[in-house]
Length: 125
Image 1 (tube, rainbow, N blue to C red):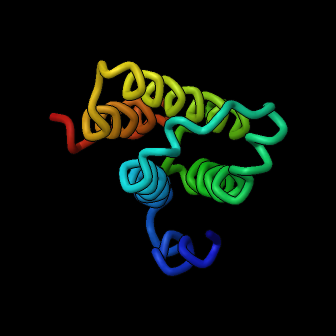
Image 2: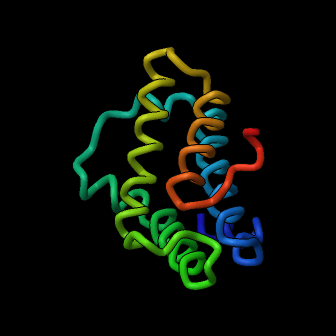
């Protein structure tokens, strides 16, 4: 997965754009492989381990964005990461329940995620 991130050129993007592209990659995988929505639940430790490469990269982008002033530095990076994951889980539940399509959930996560990080979302006028 790290190779896919490197190939996407995420390190060369502004932090907010890199984070959104990283989120998009995750949603694209779940759209392509819908069985992922129905995998059995795992422990918090197993979930963290399974997502470690993505979480580590997200935390790096959050820290870089806070240091550069591109992202709001008011809140700790770890908290922002945890809150971001909660947004993703909420969107996942909405899709599973049939209340949102993957496209609607993706838009909602983008908008909410950028607001959480203190970035204006120019795609949702």
